[in-house]
Length: 146
Image (cartoon, rainbow, N blue to C red; front, top):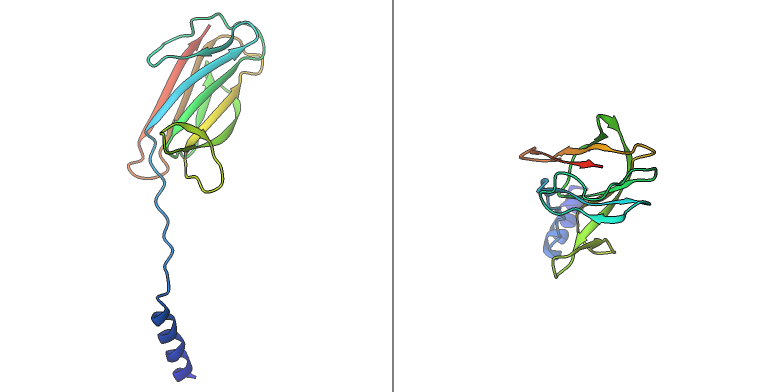
């Protein structure tokens, strides 16, 4: 029995058995409110550093789009401190550097979140998350939606 085991291990080594390794998840590097959508204004692009929306999004059915680059543990999302529900879709980097929906064989580099304010109308939207791995950095973004 020992002889067969030894021969089996020697055979696997001779074949050059491959090892499988996985890269660690990238830490959070960016959080950004990309757009706010409402029936009153349609889609409003949110420029870097903008503290509040330019358009008055009052009324129901307001949605907020947030890009998260890297991997976070558990997002905390609120409008004036009240929890907000949403969905999360993975995004991948393509050769040209643009972020887009993931297809088979592409590496997920972050997530696009879409939050429904569920009848809430105006206030300070906040999003924060902590990296899933070292260095465990916490990032946050906020935007006043008027």
